Amino acid sequence: MLLNRSLCVTRYCQNILHQSNKRSLSIKVAVVGSGPAGFYTTQKLLRNPDTTVDIYEKLPVPFGLVRYGVAPDHADVKNVMNSFTSIANHDRVNFYGNVSLGQSISLDDLIRSYHAVVLCYGSSQDKLLNIEGEATSRNTISSRNFVGWYNGLPEDKDLDVSLDCDTACIVGHGNVALDCARLLLRPANLEKTDITSYSQKMIASSKIRRIYIIGRRGPVQASFTTKELRELVKLNENYCRLEPESVCNMASLKDITRLPRQRRRLYELIHHLSSSTGHTRYIEDGRIECIFKFLAKPHRLIADEKTKLVTQLEIQRGVYNNAEDYLDPSSQPNYLDEYEKIDCGLVIRSIGYKALMVDSKIPQDRNKGAILNTCGRIHGYRSLYCSGWLATGPVGVIANTLDSSHITANSILEDINTGQLPNLKAERPGYKEIDKLLKHKKVQVVHFNDWLRIDELERRLGETLGKTREKFVDVSEMLQIASDKKQSIS
Ligand code: FAD
Ligand code: NAP
Image 1: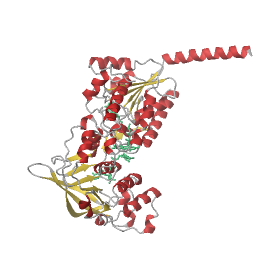
Image 2: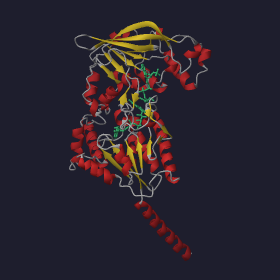
Image 3: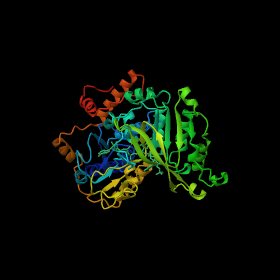
Image 4: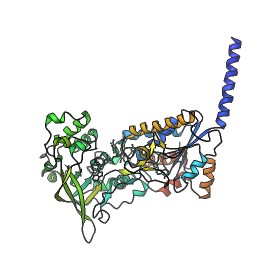
């Protein structure tokens, strides 16, 4: 018994010694970006007790599109920030905000200083329609900027947008398009959410009475999901309709049953939108009408010569020539020599995001809008990885980003275990080296505790206004709060 106990004690001491030896040779990983991909990748990497993770974030505040993309009326989705906070508080995780890869530090700086680097900085650009008038007509904006504006993204806070028109066109049939439409429909209690007060006021006094949601393909090819469409229809009961000429009844009910279940449900919901309800009544009711147009490809934007404000969106009609194509989610319609001009005073282009490459050496998959990688391993590199939208392209919800992050983290853990990761036996300076560079460039680094102070003040400010949070939208203001250690949190 005594022998057993002393054996245990010896083993325990050996273990401690082994661990402390290992700790002194910790595997230093840099993660760039603090959206879902950054946090989920970090969480999984922590499974190896020898890893320490330093998260670098361009903004002084964390959470990426959870803070700046997810709609304010989707508060439940934002709860994921609580688990991200627990990850950030882990003793082997450090957060360095206000540090931009490509500006404050370079990719080579990180590769030199860490055993492994994971790029998770998302897709911060938007796609263009590349049609006549797009660059020159005012009040033609991207959904990325519109979303950034209502969510308080610093670079979008001063967006030049006007809601003083009767009709808005939203181009694109994805969930972001539905988010924009829903916000313009003024969901109940919007003023109590974390929406920026300036945008909430403008939306509340918006003059928009009709919203066209325009897709270039058919109902089977729409990318929005049933839950999101149902939410929009419910909010705008009887005022959402289909434009009859933009759907062909080419497929019979029997054909529809061939569609996978999720697509069939979506198709049925789209068809359920009556083509007559709400029409003409909406103006007297003071309600906003939502019209879904399919098979309508943007062709040209026309603006007032003097003011340059957009006045019309011209679309080109398309058709599917047979039921087979009509029911194939990947098929393209044939576009006809038929055009239609839609009178409107606001055009929101919601046709997807794309990634910006911070270093010209990074190999790109231009079709996907992502970095060329296999299971998160970036082609041509041995210690460089990517995850999230940067690895998959700008598609998928947070759950898909979690999957991508776990795939990447598993690749890194495997490369550690199999000795594929180079220089594992040598010490790497990690943040010590980066700190020198940042000090030299006079970059004010925001630590996670500094963010918690900003967070606390935003919540308190929100409370006084009867809402969840009032976001700070100025980087300089955030940095001021971050540096003011007197504003302690309870
Ligand atoms: P991001 O969330 O974009 O995170 C990237 C991070 O990197 C950001 O913090 C960014 O500031 C930082 N960064 C960028 N450049 C640099 C740089 N050079 N240096 C350092 N840091 C940098 N999913 C849902 O499940 N539910 C929803 O309701 C939902 N709503 C959405 C609404 C919108 C408008 C959009 C666009 C997406 C929505 N999604 C939703 C999808 C979800 O947001 C994404 O799946 C997820 O955010 C992708 O995570 P990510 O970490 O790859 O990218
Ligand atoms: P998306 O789902 O890829 O939708 C983009 C839309 O733009 C598609 O209808 C596409 O049509 C259209 N489009 C692309 N290029 C076009 C062009 N040149 N002209 C006309 N139309 C064009 O992208 P997203 O809406 O930006 O959403 C990104 C991801 O975030 C999605 O996975 C989405 O589900 C997710 N998200 C989720 C939520 C939620 O869960 N509530 C909310 C927002 C976003 P084609 O199909 O013909 O290319």
